[in-house]
Image (cartoon, rainbow, N blue to C red; front, top):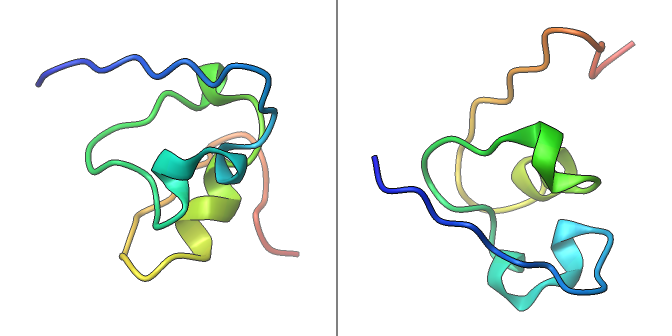
Length: 60
């Protein structure tokens, strides 16, 4: 799998970056590197994603 590193500049949320307006790239996203917004972008775009979050509950 090709690794791509995207520099977010001063943005804190992934949704602030033009690249992520229509969802996140297909493949694996390292959530320890993305800071904030990856789950929100994946859950609120037109593509289907599997969100794996082993340490936190996404829904109460």
